[in-house]
Image (cartoon, rainbow, N blue to C red; front, side, top):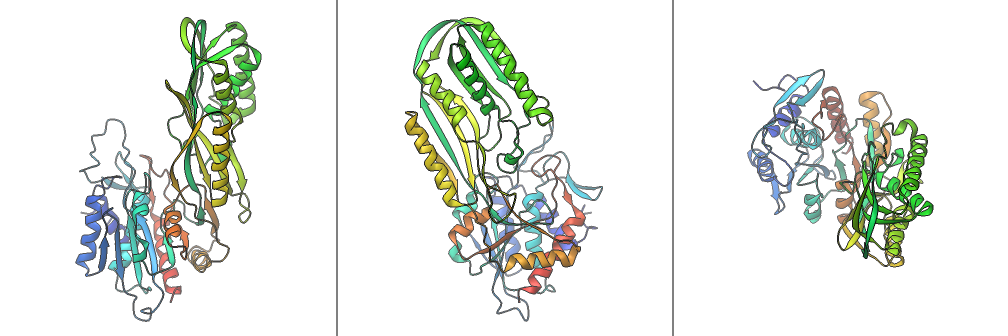
Length: 479
């Protein structure tokens, strides 16, 4: 017996359960891409499958809607693959083990893939229906969204006729997204010049910080271990004689760094320890309950090291302290929404250079270009280099939209509540696809998916049903 067969809407959950039996981790899309094609073939629907594995399925409008403007429904087929410690689940071959508990659909010991499997389920339930009024549909299912948005990058949008675009990639019911940030990784490299030093060597750690997503949580002013370490080193450099040996922190460019470590040669270890102790007390007072586990432990040894020269030490500290960080601007159209920010996600030291890796975000493309220009200037002034990689465009908020007010009306009709119109300070496929087809009128929305991308991920059954009703109401209005 199917696990979800008693849930409503039946067709949506039936399809969600079917696709959950098909492995679909990022970069392992072939099976799920072919499953989408088979779905179209069985229903005699027009389809396109490109070299990247993206699938486009088209369906004519129902009676009375044949000549309406096509509506695009879009989601991605890949999922984040995480499992509990000790699990032998094989994400390349095993189906997910679904179960229902306390009003949620969950997966045993693994991520659920509700993001974005439920988007496929909604869209394919429409493709399978014969009793739901709708305009011509163009369903786009992309590959490899979770890491790099490779499918959206490769998609040929000239194959798409419509301009009304519904991305069903939301994570929280009741929020209608009308824009997203573009992003780019900017790496600043300062050449390493070294000299031998013997004596006291201090290892300083910053640890216990909460970290977080550099887009959606940057406005919370959580502690960044890399920036905190730069501040500590600056106070040490001003209070005593030091030479930096190495500095490292963070593991991912798009994550607020939770830990950092620096190794320094010190002339007066007692004075240096006092400075660090005072800084730890100051930081604990400043961050207070926001970072209750913040710690700055120190160890001192006697050894000979290859330390950076005084000039390079000062350049690195200057860069860590003085380069911009955090929220740089708020939206002028949506009060309180972050428009532009950057995060010093990774600092690392090797034999040739000290690298500082910043993730830049903005929902206004000109502001993104301005930040990139600032980093070119920093690199030049510090005698270093800069590299840019992984850039993707912003989906800029448009004051005029046909679909956005219809979505808000539909949510009000279904729930009796007002939807929140907002933007997200992270990347969405809407940014890439609207850059390829600037005439797109986009919204992004979805059901409530708590703990998305974690092994505790779960899909709210009642929320899913409400969003399904909302989709049907919107499509009926687009005659």
